Amino acid sequence: MSIPADPADKFQSYAHPERLVSTEWLEAHLTAPGVVVVESDEDVLLYDTGHIPGAVKVDWHTELNDPIVRDYVDGPGFAALMSAKGIRRDSTIVVYGDKSNWWAAYALWVFTLFGHEDVRLLDGGRDRWIAEGRPLTTDAPSPTTTDYPVVDRQDEEIRAFKEDVLEHFGKPLIDVRSPEEYSGERTHMPAYPDEGALRGGHIPTARSVPWARAAAEDGTFRSAEELATIYRDEAAVGDAEDVIAYCRIGERSSHTWFVLTHLLGVPRVRNYDGSWTEWGSAVRVPIATGTSPGARPAR
Amino acid sequence: MTSELPETLAEIRDDFLALGEKDRLQLLLEFSNELPELPDEHRERTDLFERVEECQSPVFLLVDVHDDQVVVHATAPAESPTTRGFASILVQGLSGRAVEEVLGVPGDFAFDLGLTAAVSPLRLRGMTGMLARIQRQVREKSSL
Image 1 (cartoon, each protein chain N blue to C red):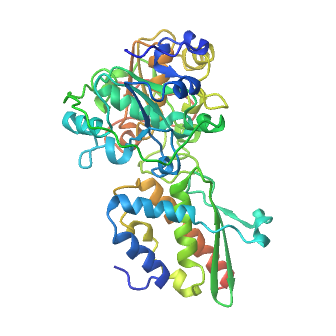
Image 2 (cartoon, each protein chain N blue to C red):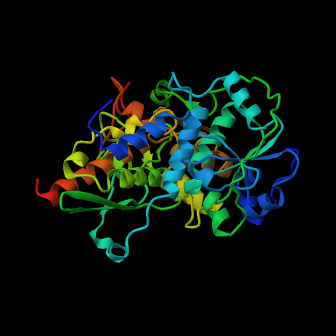
Image 3 (cartoon, one colour):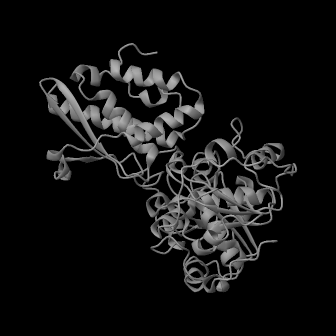
């Protein structure tokens, strides 16, 4: 990392403090050479209503997903995207977004699939930046294209597929959806339209930790101590070295992936992006319903 | 294409379809900025409004029917411009139309604006939810 990490005290208790920056740090580094700020929101129009000066927008729906296959863009697609946004392979990317960085964490996770080394999250995200009265603009940036290299996507380390989950039983599995989705009362988030799964419930043995528990009231991440209580103790992750998180389509669980990987330092965390929209409709996979994790399925 | 759309709504749809994808989003943002303020008599009566449960952000609707004419009121937060834009399209496209015209709008109208590639299906279904609730209120309030 060519740009020094934000030395803020709060971050020092995290496993990888260099993965977070504060709003204060970011405002001071907005024009620092090598820093590219990326906004990634759930709401496709939000960026256009005002964004951090110089920030480029990355849209999860149209820019990170492959339009034909349920998958992410490939190496050439990612290189073209990075080039268009003015991002070099050695750029320090700071991602922020709405809803406590939910989609920003998703973008960060996808960037990590391509091994982009220095990608950080703005603690507190868009809401905190605005709440603190920091500058916003509607001026569209005009990034200079770069020669970002074509890098193959590396799914193995941080991405799980359905088969991986079937092999994973016996090791910690975290369901980050709402309690109602976990128990099977509903197949989608409260107040969200149904994105479609045939059955309601959860993957057997998965513990329920709704993603937003990792965030404090002001949208910033909870302290390392609080996070350890939530995940290591309550969700029984303990000292496990291999954890899989999932949600409905893999976005909320990217947030939890970030927490487990970078804040708590769990050695191997994979995000199962097929998540409930795949598992809840898949043929010949077991589910559990109700509030308890359920028994480990016999193979 | 459906022929029974109210003229106002058909015009809005045609405006969207005449544009390229990027500009369609800009148009949606313009609609978002133009969501009409609530009239004074409604501003204090938020208890009369119906929450659109299909939308993740707090969207509230109220339909008035007078002499067979429909007026739609809606509120949506500025932090949810997409949802606001959809509410604004329905408010502007349906207000002033006759009861039968409003009830004749196809339930999947949201998918006719040429936004399916740019906006996630989740959002479009939110708009579908708004339309269904508007039509139900119209039905109740016009005793059809």
